[in-house]
Amino acid sequence: MQPLDLYASIEEYLDFEEEVNVLHNMMAKIAISKCPNSLIDIGCGQGDFCLKLNSNSIKTVGVDLSQKQVDIAKSKGVDALSIDIKDIVNKYDCATAIFDVVNYLDADYLKSFLQATYNLLNEDGYFIFDVNSLYGFDEVAQGTLTIDNDDKFIAIDANFIENTLYTDITVFTKNGKNYKKDFGTIEQYYYRIDELEKILVLVGFDIEEIIDFKLHDCSEAHDKFIFVCKKIKKD
Image 1: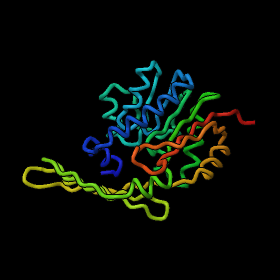
Image 2: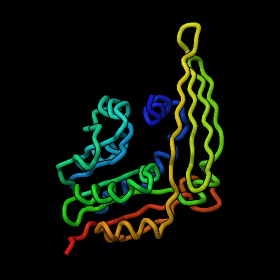
Image 3: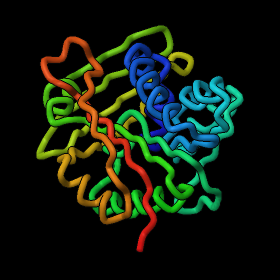
């Protein structure tokens, strides 16, 4: 099983609902303030952010590379696609990438991703996304978690090494008297603010605001940054 599909298969067992709601509420507040008629949520997961925006009369589409996540989103009534954003031909007033989506992109792919995002926006469209701070990776994300219930045993081990977070996921699923084992590793990459600013400007975005954000109230420092970027017309 692909690592992202493996994560999708265990997401319902993870106790992240409060954090998801906190970030979704903040991102929705920012997005709605830009008065978009249409929005594309990149890395939409199971589609909950799209549903939140739909309830505010904004037409949305969600895209995700995990077909399993897209299938779940569709079951909730979300207009969702499993597609690479460079293949999208429609234009939108706003694009979002929420809950570490940009951190999943390695350095070789990051610029082409940001360029593809720029291309799918209408003139003066907005791109709003979050990334983890160094504190978020080094102090918050690292650690181990085990979940044991009737049909699954889940072990998650996350280690931050040389600006990369390696999250090993092991899942034992009960199958009669036996267990089926699935294993995968998800990698996330830390980017400095100045690195992101440089690429965003080169692509053609004006960075209107960078917001320090605490996803976890118990954090000693902010664990995320939220970027609010506007597409500007290239000369």
